[in-house]
Image 1 (cartoon, one colour):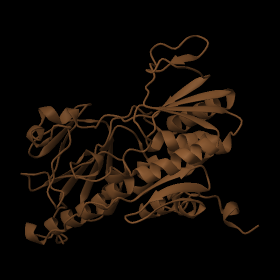
Image 2 (cartoon, one colour):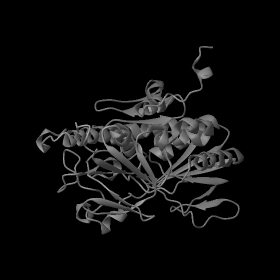
Image 3 (tube, rainbow, N blue to C red):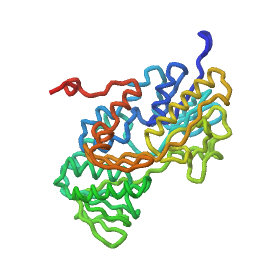
Image 4 (cartoon, one colour):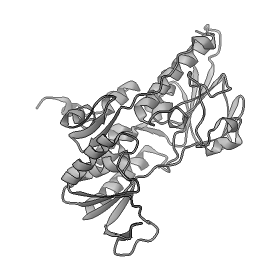
Length: 368
């Protein structure tokens, strides 16, 4: 490690999501860390659907960056350009770096402050409570999990889920998709596959038209479809030639951007051939933090840790007690996978990984 008289190497992390927050937290005492993120908080993204039906859950899942990054610099802004040794932000900050970590994930317009984010969930919850019928557009993990949360917490609501694909959960196998579909149907969720919804033309009475010519009556809707990668800004930077045709940064086995010795990319923005899941993004973060520490120690690139793409493991929550889980050799559903994920949604573990307590009030931890 650096001698006492030597200044620490400057590490700039772009994006404070699942991957960026963990790499910044891990390096904060060995390097001079700057986290650049357009919002003031980190959010446990796979838990935000639970927060929609139970807003108080957000007290544990929406976490100010300063709560875990106690020895680093935080800039609430967006990166607009990268040069060989500097990052330029939207508010004209120029931030020098020795090592850069690009973890900008997907672009999703969310409030800047934690308070605003929690207020947003209160409004979404009120939207559910005041509706008799709800339309969910999108049958990926977000749409299926939201349908499950509402179906369990608000069983009196009429729920319709429309998905343009031929089956749900196309990122995992058909067996898991079938189990999720059967669960939704058993909980009175009407599922329409192979259709899309024109959200630009909704009648005042709440009539939605599908691409198959059907109509759906709903008091409100939730849009749960894919959001774009946060890489468009890189097309004018030194990394413009490192983007593949889908806008993902091409990385090597050490998670270095190909052709660069001090720029890493982690999380959803990478071209790694694996499902884009939060637990894998966190593995990227730990490999990258280890490699930056090795480089700062003067180790050769041949000594760096390598990342192996994750296997086909996925757990999709179905309400508070059940889930469908796909493992390499078996797919199961029900309460057993539900115990793994659905009760706590890995919130306690994710907080612990960032040096925080469970966030559960002490009275709830006591035996009744």
